[in-house]
Length: 355
Image (tube, rainbow, N blue to C red; front, side):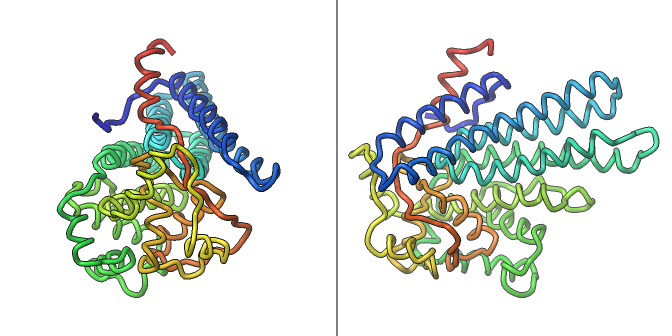
């Protein structure tokens, strides 16, 4: 079946976020936790992921209404682009990111950027700030186009000759990243690059994998901190999906979850690594990072859940290596069945056409 992003209205996005959350709660309540407090941490994270969607939708809709009241054509056009950028991002996260912790990490970044764009637009006076209006218009339009393009690339993250070549040559994630750092003429390790340079590295890998060239415009000042963080995480997630697409050990784990339809505890060396705070997790250690984290797109049934899931991926994406060190407040993660947002989106589109 096609993995094409389902275009949903605001009401349908609300419905999808609510339905995914309800199913997540049901699945979490079926799991055995060591304590009530531990269960509540998982449930609160799932609720937080849903509420981030609600906040972004509500704030962008209010922005649209405000620009209509002001009757300023320039601000209305910018508002529409900001709104579409955010709704595409929300749709992509709900339909393609099955781990709610990882989705929450993405939505946190999207919310921060959305709030910043709304604030800039609120205080903008196009009549006296023409250059600022032009910059903000370019920024909103560019992010909308980039997010739509990334959504298309998410649905294409299936094994191909590039992923097969990576596995046959035993190329580690960090080596793939650092090779492209050098290829672009950047100096030093990936983790020391600024976000724009990191984005260029990930975009270069995506192009090498046959997923098409970047639609991001690097020639003007629209690429700034909060927005670039969203693009870096998304581009890195696509690269991670490309890298993990051929991993057979990951497939074994996911198939076992599919058969058992129950939680698979992170065991053995992986549990020890998680309890130690993911100190020096290396691809060579039983393919631990790939097996446990798996594909961001959540192809398959089992996905990584737990407080560390999104944080671990975020650190890997920002450092360009699986050798990471996270120690603050993290607990053992689980691989468990989670709702298929893409399938639910199709059902909502069909059964609730007027929302």
